Image: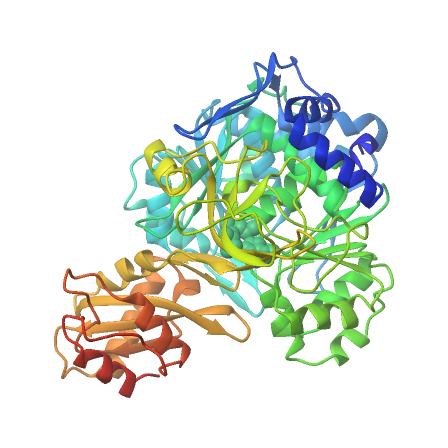
Length: 633
Ligand code: WTA
């Protein structure tokens, strides 16, 4: 571990913070010095938010896996890098030391090269939470291939969209996966997806379940076959600091998900720096993040941040409620986990099962409890603090995004003051502000505004793959000179930030982001649907849930059947995770005279708050609102 990175007191944080804002280049240059570079950078930073163009550590050469693996071998070769906990608690744990992980990564790197993968090629990864997922990610990084991990809950159509957008050459999958009591046939889903793709040359299949699997001659290869003769040494590709490291698709308010692009140097520096400080990781600690590597949290805080820091990182294949609602706490007890990061939706769902599941286990090892992905409500915060943390652990509510690459606002372990439901202060190098409707900075405290950032940090997204203009329009064009998060926030008198939810058309369901337009497009592919409008509404466990208002072409048709079909459509267009919880068939939608759907009204109805729908008289058809209210679910 890189002790020089660690902030030890709140006063030190304040000093560092001041310096980072006044002298960002000096500040980040010193931090970057502590990493392994093949060539030092010429200049720390160049940027403008108008194109936008952001470059960190310009001219620097490195390979992120040399930082995550090679440089630990001398001092931590025998330290456990990865502890893998299987879905079924009766199955065996896998532990890999840094040396073993290094060898497996090198071996798979060689196998990828043998299949013709070269620097710059895109490789999609659609795997369960097994060690091979981490190995595949790191192997891509080692040979300079750009990984694009697709969460193994997405449908064939979603896979095809991502493969096609990235023009991926290889996709890595498994025969199937275990998730709780369920199994999912991943390879079959990939086969279906590839009927819509032309760029894929090879499918590499890892055998997880021993299922009979159809292998297409010449295209499909078994993971174990292609690594069999490969060496466990592989020279790391020399990467420019600004070469692409990965693409990760995420939803926004418009159109299809976009490929957020992160690059090697800045992402490396920031994920390691933020990991060490937010979690206050010490050399022998065991750290566990329950996210899936299919999301950014898994990229930054299961794989890269912890490994670059030389930490022991736990990876869990299963779900919090299998075989029972004590599983998380049992795993913490089993491995003596010191830092634990999970999502509010998981906390809320476990809360509902009662405290006895927590009481059955010894949780004294815990020091820091993290929350990520959505606002944490006060009740869940308190439950986490009292029943899991026994009122002695720090809670760090980490606010960030796929686009930010790492944590932006959060406490640092037990150093920072804690306030339930507040993410807190910005990390060093992060310059937040609140803007009003006109885009003016709000100086006063105790106010709400649009959360923006004024200056770049090393792991800010660089572009959206294949469409830079979309990146500019989505994040940099709303307010000139600022990165706009899409979130609203409140700042209190002490300067602490509290997130209050998205202000755009993004719905956050159990910490997963969906655009309303994305779900509407999916619903509209059903031939029975004329038009649809989707909104989010508060849900006690998921945070938000999806409410769809749908006009059918034949109002007399069997609505039960239509509902089932629409659910099927969404599952096959996006994935089961995007299925609307409520579907209401309507004869019309509230529209302005110019044809714009008044989502504000639909949102209120979905929330069950119809007392003040505002002036509906200017709508094209005011009666439609009455009908919708009358039949609301
Ligand atoms: C929300 C996940 C409140 C927010 C790392 C953001 C949060 C979106 C928090 C990004 C938090 C994430 N408190 N809201 N601690 N963390 N969010 O890209 O709306 O999957 O814009 O990244 O999740 O989701 P994403």
